[in-house]
Length: 55
Image (cartoon, rainbow, N blue to C red; front, top):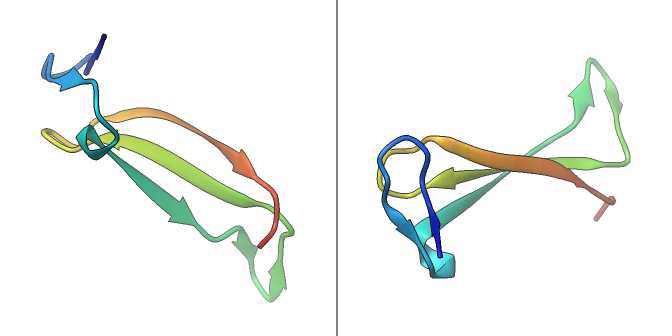
């Protein structure tokens, strides 16, 4: 079982984390990839992130 590094909350269910999707926009050009961040639902600490393909 995983735990949040900041508040030590249990991260055993999908509802224990929040997936935040961010646009990859630079000025008027929109990138073909999307960035996401995984955060603890209890304290909001960033746990991980990555890049996904375009919609």
